[in-house]
Each structure stands twice: as structure tokens, then as C-alpha cells.
Length: 630
Image (cartoon, rainbow, N blue to C red; front, side):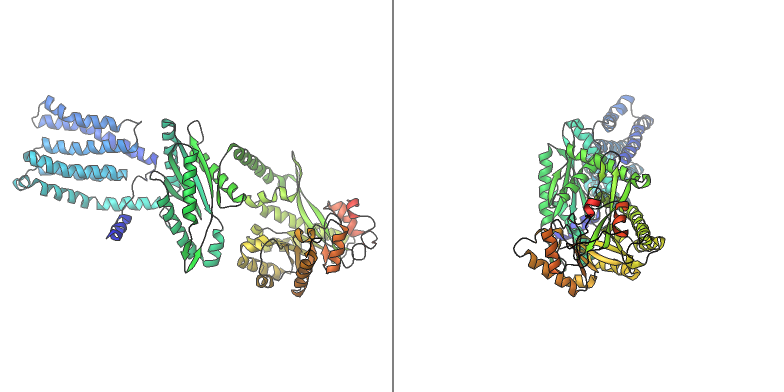
């Protein structure tokens, strides 16, 4: 029985979702109509033979309710209730002045239908309840002033219920329209409020917070690693998790809070009437705990953690609704950066960081156009001959105020903002052009240039065409270019990576797995990806002197060779490391011991006219150290 009632209730409109600006326009029209009833009913009463004093005294209630409905400092509930009572009181007075004439009852039907415009159950139910009480109570006490027929006057309560039922039936079409309008304001999958409602509730909450010396807040929630769930179990399973998460949010929020689906796997909770930030933290902790409870999907038990950002405004704070949403979003991303599965409260230091990031984003968008970006090349030496086999192209930024910035200082921002795509196009074209120049000047014809490729570039459907264009513009064959794919990008979406790499492999370029050992890439996945080169995580080189370090690295090198892959060691800093790598059978090495990244001019002298070698890098380290030359 309870389940049936819940299903029926789910089909009814929720109410109170009308945006504030729309509500104000509608309420203004309804209030004007209520005021117009005052002179109209007075004139009608006098024409019907009622004295001026009697007619005026009867209208005092309507006037009082119209005044209340017109007071802007009152809330929506109080003003709409006053307007509803005023209009149905006008219906009752019309019937009274008309001495129960049946046609007068149609006024009730018109008024109740009009009150549907509020899309709020309170004024609607006040009107319906007034009809039943008016027809029952007043109909019993003074039947001649309510009913025009003897049958109705003899059974006032029966007729009251009949009239109430007819009004509800007549309002059915309006209720259906009301629900359809609400559906447009809600997320179609979860049924949670949409963004329009979110901003409206937050603006109202902030205004009320300022009046009452309270606070309003935003909790921005994001499900950690939800993309992995979608990719592994499918989008249908992901949708079911989102629906379950939404139900949990509805149950966990306070009565006056609003749960919103912001988009994808992101949710926003608008908290009104907060005493302080600690109260918002309490709500966030409850929500995180609710969403962390395991989900059962297609027989799989799934545990998802949640990252949350909290921003609170109101008393003594001039931030707008948009500002609070932005700040909570920034705090949520900070929670993700610091390890996920936690909440972060937005503070002034985060505002400063956000403003700095915004300035950096603007600068980065101008950097490419202003020619502030340039490539530096780090040589990769063959341990079996000592010559430079490849050059890793690294994008550097000569910032106008911050000086020279290495890739780690800004490439993350480039990925987040999408600037990685145009920067990557420029870098590929520049590296291919430079390699062609070196080869033409006498560099080895098999010299290779390599470049790191981000997950964003890999997912870009136009990236293979960009690679082809760069090779064509430089007049190079495809094997002259090696694209280095970070292991983290492969781990994020192995299936999509295989597809993207197959398209690149069809071009003929070489492929390297960069940072191997940072994740837990399976052997079957590694075999399926078929990389030409494995570039080791620096930690393996650093730990060579540790017990078992050399044995572990030897096993990795043997495995890579079994998969027909070369092995490149990064971060070589000591002669002992270099000797161990050569003894293990590592193919290539790069690092500060051998050569630091340099501009094209200095590197050109190294690859076009290589110095004579002695015996330290395979056949010997260059007599004139590359590091010293640069």
C-alpha cells in the first residue's frame, strides 16, 4: 500500500520549483487581479442592494489579504497564501452577494485554475480546502447564501465534497501541465533539480541569509573514478549508479536543502539557513558517507569515493550565487588534487590561487601567438655505441614576468584548458621541421625526435591528421617520429588507448610507453599495446644501488626485449648508474650526467658534429661533455 502511495506521489508535481523571477511576475499579476476585485465586488454588492457600510465591512478581509500579498519583505509562501485566500474569499463574497446563485460558483473554478500558476501546493490546497469549508460550514449555517437549490442546502457537506471533487477534476489538466513544466527544470535521468533551480534557490538563500544574519552554502560533489566504472561496466550501469546516488542525496540532505545534478557525475547541494561553516561541513560529511556506501550493479559490488568542495557565503560576504558555485567547484578540484575521498573548504588562499590560475590561463593563450614557447631537446644516448639515437622535444615557456618555465610548470594547465591541442600541433610541426634541418646539415639519417603525447591529444580524433601534417611539412618518413604515451593515460582508458594507438601505428610512427612502472599495467595489456620502446620510471634508476634494485630492473629489461621493445632509462645522474644500466642490457639512457635539455642551436652542434667518444657511454662518453657544451 505504501509503495502504491509512493508511486502516485512520484507522478505528482513537487511544487516550489518556479524560478524567483518567474514567480514574481506571476504573483504581481495575481495580486493586481486581487486588488481589481475590491472595487468590482463593492459595486456589485451596492447594485444588489447591500448598503455601502455593509459592503465595505465585508470587503475588509479581502483588502487585508491583498495588502499582505503586496508586501515584498515577506516570503513566497506567505504572499502566495495571502493572494490565494484573498481570491477564494472574493469567490465566497460573490456568491454571498448573489444569494447563492449557481453561476457564482464558477468563480471558484476560475480562481483555483488561476492559482496553479504559482506551481506550489500551498496556495492550491488552501483554495481547495477553503471551497470545502465554505460550502460545508457556511453552507450548514447559512445555506441560502451559499446554495441556490433546496437539495444542496439540505445536504451542505455532501455538496461541499462534490464541489471540491469537481474543482480537483477541473484542475487535473492544469496539474499535468504543471508537472510537465517541472520536468523541464529537472534532470531527466535522476529527477534532481537542474541548474536553473540551483541558481534560483541559491540567490534566494543568499538574500534570506543577509536579512537574517545567517549563511547559505554550496557543496560541490564529484564521484571519483566514475569514468572507469562507465568504461568497464557500460553507460547503462553508470546511469543506474547515478540514479541510486541521487536517491541517497535526497535522503541525506536537510529538509530545506536542494539537491542538483550539475552534469555528468557532479552534484551540487544548495544549503540554506546555515548557522556557520561547521554546519555545512556536517552536511558534507553525511553526504560523502551516504555516497560511499557500496552500490550493487549487475551482480558487482562497487565502491565509489567522493571529492567535495564547500563554499559558504551570506553574512558579511558580497559573493553572488555564481561566485559560490565557482568557489565550491575550485575547492572540489583541490580535494581531488590532494588525494580524493575528502572535502575541502574554500578559503582566501584558494581564491588567490584561482585568480593566479586564471591569469596564467590568459597568459598561456597568448603565449603561442606571441612566440613565447620554444622547444628544448634532451638527447637519448645508445648504450651500445655512445651516439645520440634520439632527441626528446620538451616545450618550455619564456614567461614575460616569471621567467623560464619547464613543462611541469604549465602543461597541466594546458591540458585542463584544452590549450594542449594547439600547443601540441605547433610543437610537432616545429620538432619535425628542426629534425629535417639537422638531417640536412649532416646528422645521422636515422636520428629520431620524440615527443610526449597527453591523454587529451590521444583522445582527439584529429590527432592522427596532425601527425601526418607535421611529418609531411618536415619532409620526414613516419619512423623519424616517436610519440611517448604516459602510462597514466593508458591506465585511465586502456581500450580507448588501444584504438588510438592503432591509428597512429597505421601511420608508421614509433610509439613509446613513458614512465613505465608508475601504474599497474597488466602484461596482457602491455602485449596488446605493442610499444616500440619502454621508458622506465626514474625511480628504477634511482634505486639501482638498493638491495634487489638491479635484479628488478634486469627483469623489466628482459621482459621488454621479449616483447620486442627497446628500453630507455631516464634520469641517469651517476656513472655507477650508467655502468649498471649497460651491464643489465638497457638500450638507451638520458639524464643530467649525459646531457641536459638544450636549445636547438646547441643540440645541433652535438648531433651534426658529434664529439669524439671515449669509454663511458657504451663506446665512450663524448670527450667534450654535452652538458658542458650546452
